[in-house]
Length: 303
Image 1 (cartoon, helix red, strand yellow):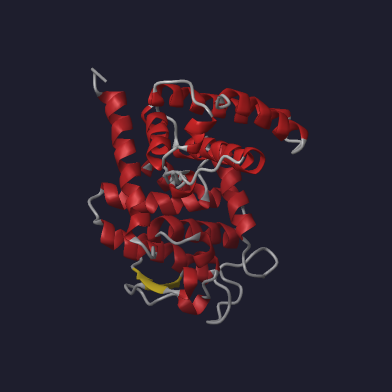
Image 2: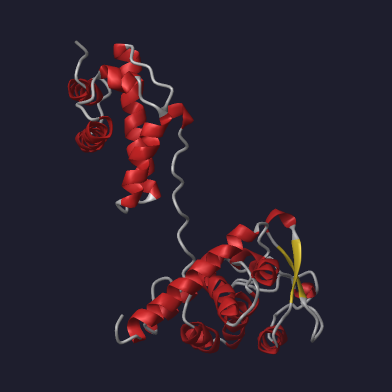
């Protein structure tokens, strides 16, 4: 008579905690996930699963289990972990009990969704660009910080793209900025008058405005460090009650999200951000929809 799958589960957990010396929490989690899987098979196949059931398992059976978990609201990352537990169980079954199933090799792991970009409100983004200079009393640093934040929010630059600029990279008034992004790819970014004005004000106070000199300088005269920018904004947001996700990169996200809200098309935003793939830019449509739903829930009387 074929051995019950539950008996094999118990032996597996003993092996996992004993020979493999897995942490008790890991043994507990694997045990719970495999028990839930066997419970699914009980209903799916119409009887208590045995070694023969596991041997005959099809890819369709595993997909049905994953689909049921997804329908219950289990996220991709969690389903991937559960699938990993089942895969470890089957490796043990093959090695110790000669039970072999090719079903798992036909299943792709659920891919965890990338977290949505967290944009700031237009009011918070505007506050940063207009008031960041108040974080210091040194005119040169005040102008530098204002110009830097204007570039991130007004032109959508990555923090390292802004830090790598030289004085000679700044265009003449009314002309776009040439930015070197990831993979050494260049793109053209138009500068709003307010952004250009902030940059021009800073350059007037630049201690050494030669064309080959770093545009943004630190207190010691070297090229500005990303950590300094992050700390400056971190201190500013805490003093002004801004959300914790108010970071330099959030200003770039805000640039894209606010453009989308204003009617800009995805292709144009892709070009401005320097995304290699349109699918990366499409994530901002989820952000915009999410913000729209938040407004609806807060405003509609029947929400």
